[in-house]
Length: 325
Ligand SMILES: NC(=O)c1ccc[n+]([C@@H]2O[C@H](COP(=O)([O-])OP(=O)(O)OC[C@H]3O[C@@H](n4cnc5c(N)ncnc54)[C@H](OP(=O)(O)O)[C@@H]3O)[C@@H](O)[C@H]2O)c1
Image 1 (cartoon, rainbow, N blue to C red):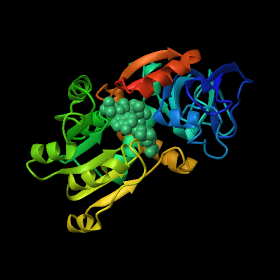
Image 2: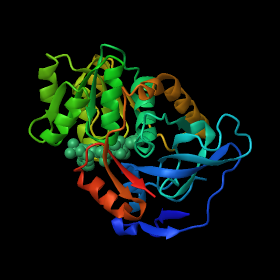
Image 3: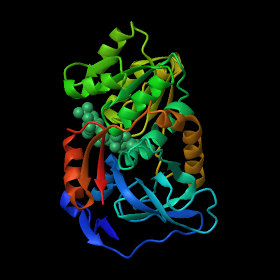
């Protein structure tokens, strides 16, 4: 198979296109002929040597793919050779063949482009598990999404709108905010032009928001907490600005706030199966109807993974970057 390896950590040139022996599915797994792999921020950290794959996972980067099932491992009864699928992976997506756990597959309808479907599993599972299962966002509540135009953000906006929430976003340019608005975001804040916490309090007439999906981390901790309404929930999934910040416990107590954090990749297989099953039941009908769709910035050949990482690091993209073997 063709694959991208990272023989030694570093810049984009650390991604090496090569040929490797084909992988094969074990018990409870399927082998996928990869149509595309989604690129995630975590892949950049892995390439740099800051985010090693969990024990037992493929050393190749790539946490999500779409494609066609080529063969089944033992004990797989509910999928068939030839099925169009997309999958959450602990690694190994940057390749022409990938092995996925049968419990972490989702069916790709004919109405959805098979390549574009690679942009869904990681973002949908992350947003669903954090914003809905953990933070319990309810219809009528307001969600703030930092990095609204990111792969994660574009899905968070669509899901929150579909489930009846008002959505506020921060992003770094007017073009990015316009893209967020087209997806349904209503409070649009250019964090480079003004202080997001100030803008948000004004836009919500002093109340604040109910849930914040935060991938910025340390530098935003205090302002995030000050942007929450009573009983507000902060869910942290990334630390693009750094890992530490100052926590005002008095504020947490006075407003009955809660703070959560999680990382999807390191969860147990059983937990990820459960999240994917919940996504299939609760979110996938919205994908089947077209109400929620992948927002694709650009496609690159797998051999050009370095160009895709370069674009991700430039932060110029809106939505997902895909690698096509
Ligand atoms: N915990 C989990 O399970 C999990 C799973 C998936 C993703 N994530 C996290 O979710 C975040 C988004 O992931 P993604 O793959 O969707 O990323 P992405 O598409 O590359 O989006 C990240 C965006 O964040 C914005 N940003 C704001 N401050 C930034 C900073 N200091 N440095 C870099 N970018 C900054 C940038 O847009 P602007 O122009 O608006 O600044 C950038 O485009 C990442 O932190 C990722 O690690 C976590």
